[in-house]
Image 1: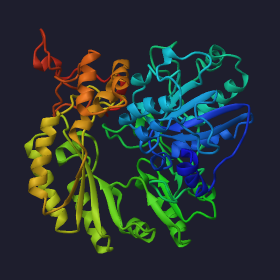
Image 2: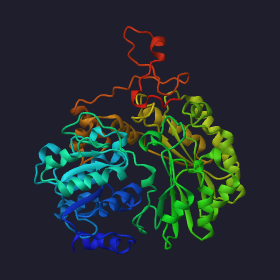
Image 3: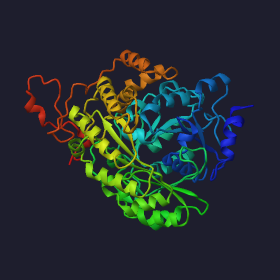
Image 4: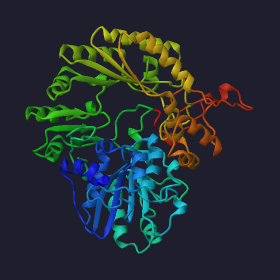
Length: 523
């Protein structure tokens, strides 16, 4: 029995909203991770609908198999979901990428589809390879050895241009000519720098799900975008830059996009508690008996009314973000959350009968020291006196297009030592979940790397490990240009001290602005 019939067809049969279409111009929209992860991506679903809504263009999906090695041994070509055809048999092979650590998965997906991963090895007989998604806004440069086209920004603006070019182009170069110069279109063979990003006007929003499935990470949940962008000035976050200016949708507008058959609705936005219609939409949905999911709630805006709505929507554990282990570091990041805000949220969650409070935070921030970790341990103990606490701890990874893009990575040993201390002192107080420091280091390399990092990934994409990454990076001559930079608490985020002072002294360099990508964001 074929992989499609045995593994994919049962998933397809359980979907609601699938689009089946045949047309002269064929697009494969691939997600370089398993089906359940890809189907939880609202952006991925929007692109799927946009292509299929264009006359003369048909789009089918493809996903990286759960076990790529076992699939490769079958000798089959990667199939599309809708028809089971060879995913590489198309005019445009598009990948939507959300995560830095999916870089090797991009290469593997192309390989399994029968497309040579390296752009320079392909010719006119091959599908045009396009890569889009959040990763391309964050850092497109590691993708340049593989992509013919890199799409940066809002798909609502980009897809119509691509679809028209697909219908009209008579050759690969003709296709490039038709899309060259369009906002958001980066052609690695022609351009050395990323272009102006594509930004969709409010009239093309909101984004909403096309397909609902029980096999998604967000099982049977219909997603609708409450807002795009973010009004907050948090210096570490990409939402302000990656998603453009803040654009709120109207409450009734969101409700009108939700189909009558939806039983679970997820509101998507970077700061939903800042969205002016969250309570109205949430109360309307819960009054209908619809389960409710939210992507982000700020502790400083939580009140009893909002918490009651979320509980009525089926939420059992309240989730907020601290994003830094201490008050002074939260101020440095312009997070705007205080320990009092977190305690208030814990008290509200307890009083309303929530099973616990989950708090997300980062460690490994530039000016961080042992006192900051002591404060994290102390306030976690205070929170645990109020309600059951789970801590989700991630190492801080500096990103391009933020004021922190030239901050140094704290280092694997430093982060692991701090995690060990937290685990030792809080093991009987809170449930602890942390991200690997070693894989955070790899994410950090990809987040700010160039084509050399992409080629390192190409060398190891079938046998990825931390050791393989280190060797491959050495082989391509990679070195960390930010390793010796220093962040200081008395300096605004985005202003650092370079480690190699040369003929200058420490004080002369202390106020130098180095974050040209994020100029004006460190306000």
